[in-house]
Length: 155
Length: 182
Image (tube, rainbow over all chains, first blue to last red; front, side, top):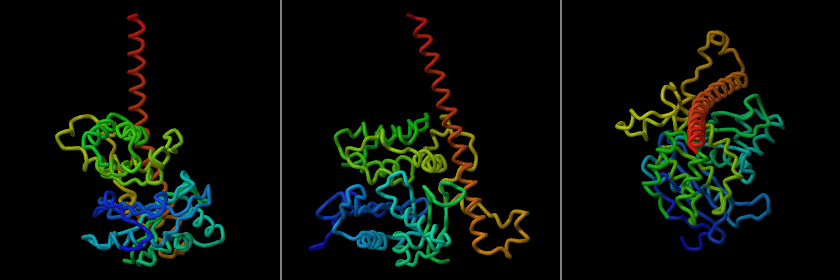
């Protein structure tokens, strides 16, 4: 793709995996994998480094779209669900969890709060608008240090 | 850079013997010393144990493994590795003992666990379920999911701890024998 701001890495891209990075800075990337056991998509996108404030020239939406386009072209098409594993253990990847907790603190119910995250917003573009919750930590209620969330298409 | 089938076999053997996921990652790092090994972690776990982890995807090539929080690795990933062992343990090795042998109904994934749960079928809830507000039903479902998930984490971890305790005892006995022989 001429003048593309991101480059797909052929060595990390297969029918069940996708890896692309910012053409000017490989620290910014998307890495994704389909779990063939569940047909669920798990991914990580890095377009900024919170500790330094550095940002990629590529928008996270663009990397998400590239990922979905890749998997949509595979046999079987789009995955059954998009899995969010939101965890505080790595602060560089806590954006979704922070947004989720903030929305809950503002009074949203959990499905509404989940849809306000980056993953929820992007999942909705592909009609993954049904939210199913897995385990949370703590189990008693927010604010969470971990939440597993599944975005599915309506039954 | 590619995965090595010998390392896949080593990882399986180590896990059956009681190595934790964080120990397995150290093994991957050691076997690919000088290479950008964090990029291989997800692929090794997929090939060796049919599971998905993205935990190492954001790590730099110089990642210090002493700084890694193993909490995610040692809970749901362990549960999935055990719950999917029928996929990655060849049947001709089924007679070799593994530390999780005898654990029953360990889910191979969280969605599998979710599918098993039917709080609306519980006797205490059956008659009132339809009259509950959706937000209340959602809370009950989530509480049920958490109870079931943490129960399985605990069951798997308890079994692993016992295996590791056995190994500590064996090492202590070997040490005592070595001291007695000097």
